[in-house]
Image (tube, rainbow, N blue to C red; front, side):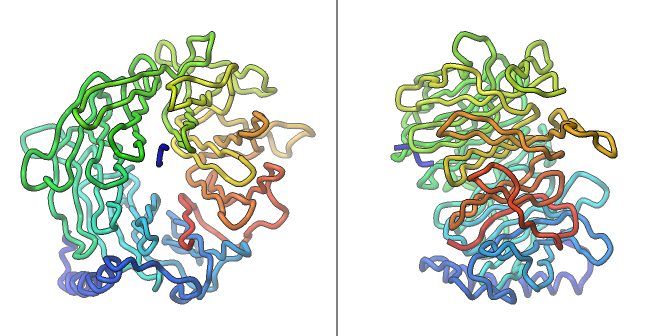
Length: 449
């Protein structure tokens, strides 16, 4: 079974000290198996909440984390949680007691702020300023620590790139390992190994978290092809590493087994549609022993997959490949065509509907006013795992957040900065949407079980 700066203002320094002084009490509860109970959400009082990050302040709207009643699709009558200037990516701790948020976009307004939210009280209880941007951070299974990859963080005497460890009980950094261009992280089920993947690299850094700050924390294993992610067997002896291949400047997209008992390479499968040379894979989801892998094929440095079978003005498309991890074989016998772009969001909703999101895809925007039958196309694809049908919803923009609502047959999708609520029975927007969410929204997470 496969399991899946100091600010420089004295008053603000005192506030930060106060904030972190209340954090240990919260984490004492975490160590006892605490999780945010239903119906006790801070000021909202909601039983089933979704958090949305809004990256802009405009008019009466402010940047922050907005709260929505995910049972009724209504915005909570409370203000946003302040988590920085341009909040985006969120990660929940395994017991859902805390939400970690990164604010930073590489512009002059970027504050590179890492914030911890107490989900029970719906308040930010600690902040840290990071030395660079991050696209990836993971949490230990016990919720005690987070590990943050920063590919551009400066390192004295060597190329930029670090993985920092931060204690969630004190809010302080506890150590780092210097890994040039470290961009993405995957953590195993037991929290005993973290795999770090660097830009433009064919190696994987195997990190032992307990050795960070002590020594001998990293072992480097080569032989990959631009690796970007990994999934782990239930016993943590095997990692299934996703190689991005040509899309990331390499050669061939594939899934490569890594034996973690001795850090040697094992079985390998190229994720190419049978009978073709088109291979792609930048994001994956594992369900049981089945991996769904999405990406955009490249040849000669440019996208190369035709949109065969789709009626569209787009000239290039992406691929979804299905891999049986138990046999390390590709199981789809024909190409599954999806939108192009760099795929980095994927989630499985009710009724077997697989939602795949990308950024920088081929956008088709109709003229204004749109003529009858005009095409609208963005970066979201929906694949019916039961029938094999692909739907490209008529919506523009990067798909930056996808969250199935576990208690309902709907999926929240943030695309082009706005929320769309999709009915998984029709793969179309449901009739009722949330109309009073104003801003540029990025990510979405459900908080309660």
